Image (cartoon, rainbow, N blue to C red; front, side):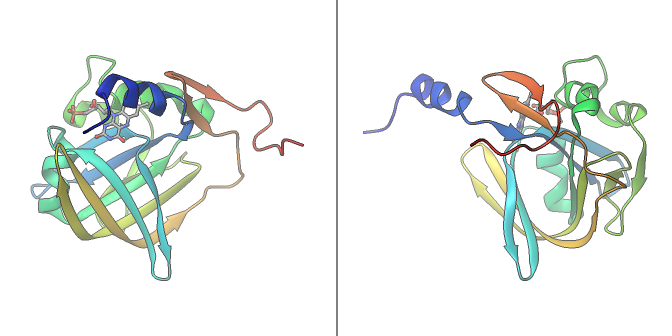
Length: 170
Ligand SMILES: Cc1cc2nc3c(=O)[nH]c(=O)nc-3n(C[C@H](O)[C@H](O)[C@H](O)COP(=O)(O)O)c2cc1C
């Protein structure tokens, strides 16, 4: 027996998450990126992250070949980048990088200069599971910009942020 897909998705809408643009520089140097919430820290020793990416996306196709990817965690003020890299505008492929300020990281993957935090990785492992590939990255470099700013969040199907950044609920 398996849970009904619609109920599963309804449950997952209740899970609020940080939003990143996961990028790669393909074997021919072509830049590709997707908006993603399915990413997290894996281990601190060694510094590693994982991202779950649909194999139908460019990043899902190219990162296992190129061996590099970067997780660029977005600030609330960079919400338009989440829309662009989710395919909600006409821009696709390389054209998406006309939005935002990007530079190659040590791995070669595009790193967003205004990211709250970016984790530039060399691919340690790519695990296929059903529709997705799980990219496991060894972090070569973490960049955190100048100051912490309110994060972009995705909750109940909408982009949101916190007014003052992280605040404890008491
Ligand atoms: C809030 C949000 C979160 C998303 N999270 C993921 C994710 O974790 N993994 C994924 O593969 N796609 C995710 N997507 C979908 C991709 O961003 C979307 O399919 C993207 O346009 C694929 O680009 P491409 O097919 O043009 O390469 C998400 C979309 C949105 C709006």
